[in-house]
Image 1 (cartoon, one colour):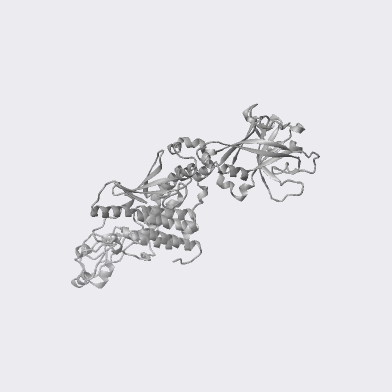
Image 2 (cartoon, rainbow, N blue to C red):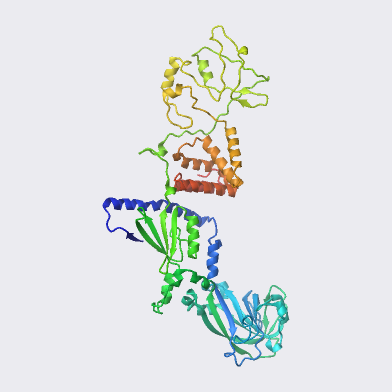
Length: 600
């Protein structure tokens, strides 16, 4: 990395502020490093299956064109028709007097020299793997086979030809005597390796090869199965062979796309030929990454090779593939891509909207805030009645008694005929019970909860309440004594079953969300409501607890598991979840996948 200052001088305070601004890159890079280390053991996808990598590999393949020149083959007689095949031996074992069994895929037909006739009948075009792949053992066995049946006068009808390509089934007519020879692609690759610089520039390389055409007998039985053929030299009485000089033109498949990029139009006229291949190698795939910081007034530059990502070092194959990878895998940054004749560069800056945090008072750590947790909710007791009734008889005791205090803290429900509990009920005053030593009858109020009022509590109970600290059931904040004795109901508890039903009905209204996404949203909403997740500082604990609580269900449904992971990433984007906690949650889920009943 090289540091580039856009301003000549900075004060010590400005230098410190600039360094702190650049250090903001450390947090997302740490997360990407954790993800990359986990991807080594358990990759989420195979890199070679990405579309932009497949396209980049295809553009590096070599297209070869084979033709014959009449000026260099004056001594050869009755060459045509000449069949050119791209084939690979099925095994390296061959019997005496027999060639290996070759399996071919495409067949081209040449009927004249390149100086005469139609171009479709004078050239055979094939596509072979790139130079790097040709060096492998499997690709070394690829061969170009030439078969001449001109002396026998056998010509395949035009109905079996499409351009200069011949159907494989029509080769059954070629059984019998012929002349054949082959060109090994690994020898061709060694010659093309010397011209790699010209191929990289999109130029065409011309090669010449001499093929020995030997008399042989084309076995008929292999032509009828799996596009295979073999040659036998014992079944022919001709012993003479002849030399055939072949012209080969090679170029990269993606050479036509080089003119579309200004970077490929760089002129190498001033570069000495001796160092031209090295300069081309250094330029190919090099990308400059400019890290903007300190309000985009300063930057640091890094250079990678082979279109590699600077964060996870994954080679992307092309500049377009690098853009796809950065935007999809590193969306915490803003990328600006630009190309010139001199360089390919990417300007990187932090997304400001991805770093929003909860507004807290200065010096307050959200992790130290009051947090209420209940592992199990007690179900409300419902009145059991044997008779169906519409009127409620209130039971009133003396004010200030212990029984009255207990009655004021319990929930009262009335059961209707359909079995559902209701919060409000009308009471007929004519059916209320009166006591001789009680005040006039009062109407019993039904609600979600009841509490003691100032008038109904004696000084002793009031003094006991003053010694305790009460917290709000929703905000989890301390409550003043006036709030405790006020008529306002601070509990307002909601029935969990009704809340789940309302949440599911609300999620069902979304039409652009899958069933698994709705399920994971409902599971999370129900979890945070029951566990009273109130502040942003509670989210890390909630994610770990959610992974342990629903881990078995998540690992059994891959779509549900990915929905939970994407949700954690969204929480991380909004700075509600740290990388360490996300890694802990994934380890917990991995423990469930490995069969552990209680993963730590």
